[in-house]
Length: 424
Image (cartoon, rainbow, N blue to C red):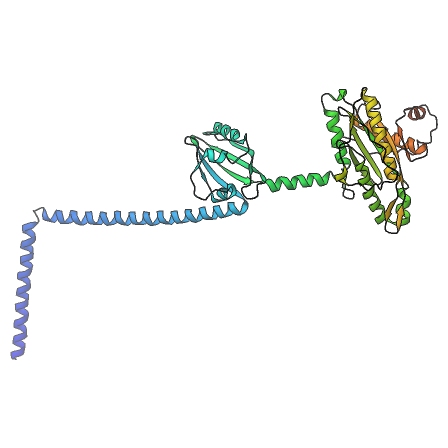
């Protein structure tokens, strides 16, 4: 009973204390609600919240900016690696100050320490004389949305060999202070193109220029503005007896004979003359007339005429008067030497081959006024030489063709090819 009374008494006392505490807080709130303290606290809390928001935003921006910078740095590294592997250098030119910024590939290309400060004069000093002027002209496209490509030459700092660079330049709209672009070494590309072009103009078996090369030479000759003031000639050569060599000893021996015959023919010519292989055992010799005629001595009958390209030398010169007389003498002298050298036996192991040559001569402008007609008449003259007994040369004679036009028979008519390749 006493414990119950004690519990009830404690509860009643606690209720009284709680009521007093609540009353005190109400009095305190009622006393300060009209003072600035409350608003100061509230304002402080708002400012702290705003400050935390700003700090959070700035931190996010910093984090995002750092991530972008890292991504950009990685992208630049990838681009630098890709351009280096591809052999392309990226550059920027400050036009106002003539300073340059290069990718590492360009430093290596020019043999300059990576990261060195570069001025335009540093670049120009490593280029071929005159290419610096090309660079200065590029300033004209600064501030314009224009692109220009040009080739510049430099000397490789490692091996001292000339190199060709392709320079691509891009102007920037509304920014006349900068030019950007790329550079790449295209020396190997040009060399491959040259080799491909050379292969297209070269006979694979003999190494002589082919029909396409002859077309180019004649087209260039007849395209010159003063061609009417020049004289030149063609000799059409056919090897007599070559078919018998092929039939009896086989094509391998026949091919070897053509190769050795080509070397001998080249050894009979001056530096400005050239021999072309049309196909089979047919060849054409181009003989232009320079300022002087060449008097070629008859070769010794005892000499072994196995010629090499290194044996071609410029023979003594002899002045002449009439151009056509000079050209006639020159072509006859070369023809005589060709007849002799091609008559000397060809030895291939145990096999000895003997051939001769029939040579037709046609001269511009005496016999023809265009390339196609000149080649056709040299071809016709060659068949006239065959008709006379082979192993000789003959100048073009229009009489047989005139007889054919008049309906008279001629033994050569059946021998002339109907579809000789025309010169373009």
